[in-house]
Image 1 (cartoon, rainbow, N blue to C red):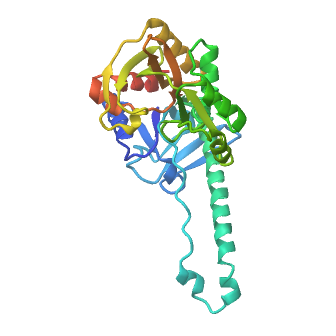
Image 2: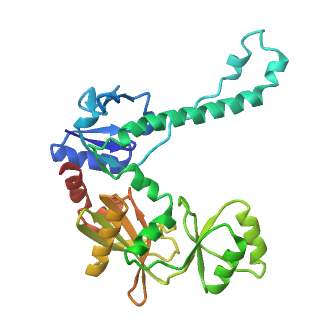
Length: 332
């Protein structure tokens, strides 16, 4: 049975995992969703509740096709949307005398229709892929629901808090009167996107902060959190195993720091057990949990990433994350 690698076959982490599976004599295939419909396709039969993945290139798989039911597990690294539709060229639009000036004036409408059609096509692609993503006999590492939970970090915090995790005081929303009061009650406040995708930054608190918040919230909701002084700790949870590192950085968000350093660290057993419970409660087989360790040694939960990068951490520290991840994918 095969292991599916969801992500670009050119991605270093995907290549690294493919090499590890090959050394383990485990067959695998690449599934780059950006090329779904061109380099690989799906046929699904609801009557038999099974499907086929068809490959148009031998570099993607050692077989021309693999059934859903013969896919033992799937590693979710990255979902890439389809390539955008190309707009018709000017020559194609003007190569006939039947196009009048009035038709040329409709170019804005054509562009709008093209974008609308592109959105509809992407929805059709995503809905078809769901037949595969939700196939229950495949061990998804991790499932699409787990990935979606990461797109609502406040929900993750709620789950972790109910399990006993310490959560920084947090505001989520776009109500300026509540946000203004929240900021005034905290000495230092950090801004984060609700969904993620951008790095954290400190919130400046000028005298006219209420008017600034009015302007900001007319555009989008935000997450504000009390700043926790301390160090960054990341725990990689792989089934029942927890491997932790400390990330030292002079920046608020170490992702902005090219000089950040990573070293192995030990976390208390109760934090390890909490990390495992959080991972399981979020429906994950593995994840990377980011903590903020205060000066008093208290661990504050920040987020649980269901498809974390690990290759650089592994290279810098010698932690064998790959072997444990392969074991999760290979063992039933």
